[in-house]
Length: 175
Image (cartoon, rainbow, N blue to C red; front, side):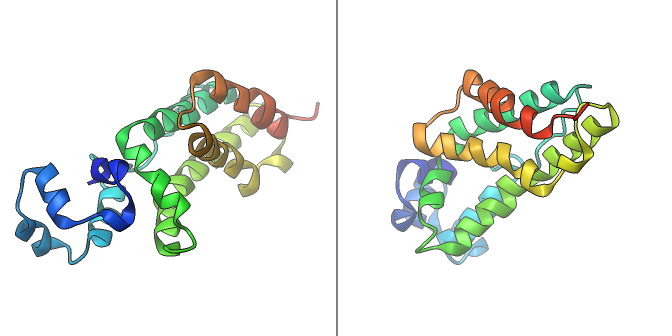
């Protein structure tokens, strides 16, 4: 499903194309979903074919945790399932509910994990507790998405730059 979306647009999604790619009949899809949109929303949240829940890396350091979380997110966005998000993100004016679902299912879970990472960094003296906010936690995942939308890929050097130039200074402990 997500592979088909990566190759086409949301408006062009059709059960016949999805069924052909999946090696099944349209009737099998219609038994479970009434529209391609319903199938898409299920596919996005599927832990195997979609995005599932991001893993909290807990490497023992703020830099290590950020590198693992955001690097993993960037790699997923480079895969067909991640590339499938691009058309959805650009369709916000016409399909705001899909954009909201992408945020809810993919971006916000990464922000929640990043908030936990920042909390542990405070405990280790690596981050200022006054800077552990939802807004600060949102910066990394949203920058990864923005870079992916703009450049089509986010390599390890770009992830490192986001961490070193933006996130670590934002979270820095005032000492």
